[in-house]
Length: 327
Image (cartoon, rainbow, N blue to C red):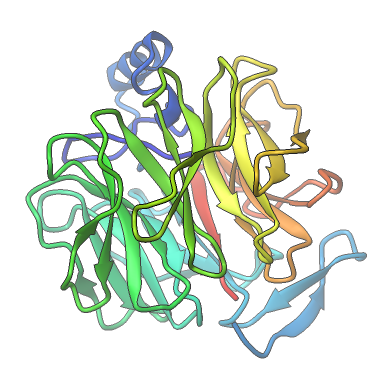
């Protein structure tokens, strides 16, 4: 799940999903978490195959195919990478600041992420080994939720630099920041289509959070979901035919759903009373990485794209979330 939070820190608890930030429920939960002082951060090429944890799914190993994620296992939120089976864990950031929300570049050579190391939330970029750190946004505003465009030359992100949260794109050299959405409501959680033509996102412009898509030049706005619930976390599938998303349409906390990219044929993939949030599709499009609270803390799970074979790949007492799957 994803979060808007205009402070020097990120979201207090992954359950305080950004789709609930502006609801009374979220404000209540957020206040409770603050009182307990639990601060949690704010969503290819040659591949060698290894057997998945279940033995019947192909996973990918190596720099192209690794999962990047954020974790508090070392005391503060850092960016880590690991194989899809949870092995070869590496801390890439090693910084006293809050580093979170990793996003792989299309060629898996770089990772965009969010950090407050310069005093406020900014979008940074680093090589896949953690080197060559660059601040892309250099703004006094709250910049979050990076998402690479398929051309590898731009990063979409969310910012309140113009007063409310909107979606922007910036060139990877930090130039050419362009506003994509322009609405008085909150727009967030951008996810670029594989062909680069569209951006799926969440917005409360119609009262509650719903999933929309827009052309990458800001034209062609289309609403995809129509419920009274909160729909968030849109994630395009590898081939662009489907979009995974979170919704609380059938329960208090969100579960993971998938739909066709035109909004049709919605299918529920998880049934968890504690909340599940999708983050990434596997390179072969057959699996989905998601964050789940089913073990009473935030862990990263993988499941097949039909909802079967769910397994925990982090198994750690700390908060692990915001998985990004390299190609």
